[in-house]
Image (cartoon, rainbow over all chains, first blue to last red; front, side, top):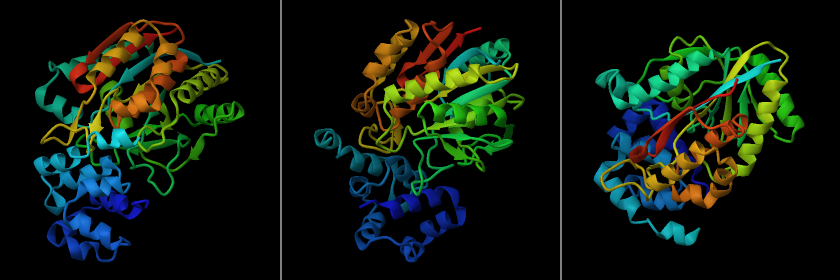
Length: 93
Length: 274
């Protein structure tokens, strides 16, 4: 999976203020027109950045979700989820 | 013929312009950039060739170049909502065109980019070094963020090719070269500290890089900066490749100035080459 649509969503959250505000207001509705898979949609709504990262979403782009606290992400939550992967990726690479 | 007069390495942390605006000229970051700016102005370059990495702003994953050069009359930025002033700056299209042809002749297939703006990796250094935007630039984009990254050997060889291209540019101009970026940096990935968005997972690698730079051990640095080593230093540590390409003009020279912000995983360095 390329996770292209997830990466694009993150980038658009930076560049498109109206889209960012829509994501804050009603994330499911804002994502409805996007070509995301059901699993990607579910993971985004759950703020499951670790799963998205494992599917190929770029961490720099995912960090935009934290920057505006989209999908319920706060720094403690985001970092705890990502840090749970530490060591696993080194073992895999 | 053009002359290479100086080289510089600097970080491009997006928070620095706002930090320095708040803390004033006596804060550490302001002083370090001022040291580099002083040496840059003393070298009096007519053109700055800057090795920079785009953070998915100028380009995106629909088409992300490994190496590219901007050829236009001017560019602008930052295009990524970095809290800092917006600037326009001239691009030295003549050198950029010559450099691209020369590099392609050497086997480096630089993508052509004619309509573009740039993000903080280019504009934060210029904000501190040439805030009047009165020195034209040639931006060379190196993929430091989207794996697989180009190898350190490939980036250094590109830097050597670009050095030869500058020296064969038939204009009586003074050219300086800048490498922009960090040595150890993780943003949004598994190596961030608890409760943070970003961190410096491997300050020891930054110290190692600095030692090599101080002693002009370019071959050792290039050999050690493997893809795996850069990955251990963080998911943004590929920005060292901008420095390694810049070192293509440095040869065996030692820097005239180099100071690290070790805990932040980056350094400020200057070489005088004329």
